[in-house]
Length: 294
Image (cartoon, rainbow, N blue to C red; front, side, top):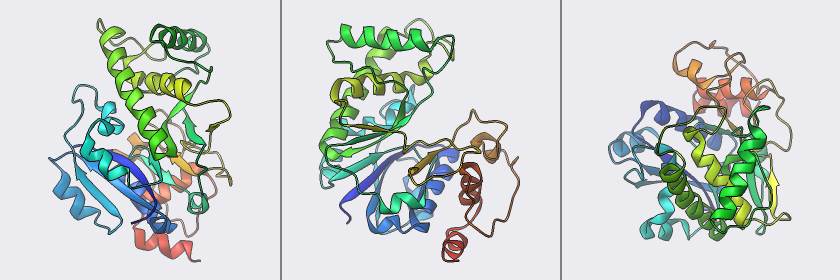
């Protein structure tokens, strides 16, 4: 058992199961399994399939019914409401809460988080030129209505690294606030992207929770949830998040699932994020380890 753990939820969806393979392979190719375990909370309907596909001594598969079938995004951070799940994660010093459709870079292997820092990615829920200011203002109004602090952070991503106590606290707030938003803000419809939209209520809730709990000197933003596009991977980039919205670049997760991307046989580790994601998604762990050693 390592001191730190990556936490994900694997739902009963074949696409999500395959996407977990991206995280799983990149975790092994850079020997990150020597410093970080993976705790994969898993839908009971697919846990036997997942366990047999991704067996590893440092992966803990924990059976978990979905927190919500109507709004499945809740499943990625709602596991901390269960005392049995808390007993598992509380054995670790740091947690990295993320999604299955992600890739670790070589720079994560040497990453040592600071106890008092909270690391988050960058989200796109309030970046619209036409609606961004209005969304950010609305989130501040909701924070005030709930009696919560708001430091003015924005563009908070889905993933989070922090010491276990802080991360669990943020995620519990995120769960409660998501449920509040679904009940009170989207009871008459889903809204519309890129304006106020139910599909990113989880990110709105993450924004509000982090703004309430994390002080300005604690927050470190940008090294996780890095774009999966033509951007070069820098020494600051620890983790890449695939997107369904990138349609014209080298890697789109929807195009990958549809078999529409080229099967390029890289004999090296690409410098760009999108090419790196394509490499990891397409190749076996044996091949990936081979080219890492070159």
